[in-house]
Length: 221
Image (cartoon, rainbow, N blue to C red; front, side):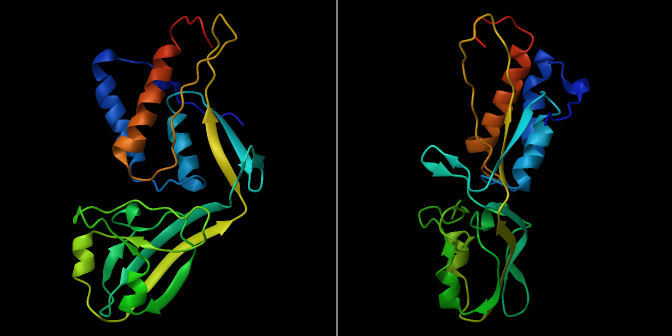
């Protein structure tokens, strides 16, 4: 299907490009993206307000060369609560706190069991790492190493309100015909959550480059 486009936002103003790119990154930053799921579709919907991308959905189980499209993952909420009921790890504060593709979980665990599912960066004590579990059904949380050192030996409530079930891998495509049928491919991935330089800078650059190339005459498609 073709995504709807708000052409009122289609004109490039050179003096505003940097601000407009930063604004797009800010709008996309809070979305919890992965290789599949609602975060990807919402990201593509927002991009489609700038360029008329065509949306494709590939079903779970489809063979793509040596890879098979996995189950679709979505998440609503996740947290770790201490014995006083306080959210000490909160997906709402940062979607990086949850290992991407974590299976649903809702139970009470000891400190030792919780630590087996926590990921940190010991050499960057205040950073929240980014971890995935695409092809190994598991669950986990990512926290600052300084927070790990402060955990008390008590019982914790862990909850990941997620789903992992047959669905689709969704991607967007925008084709600009040139004088030749030979093509140049400009690609960016949208599968990461709140990672500005790794993910969102590429999305913003590719989107605004497409807006620029749309109004130019090209030799290659």
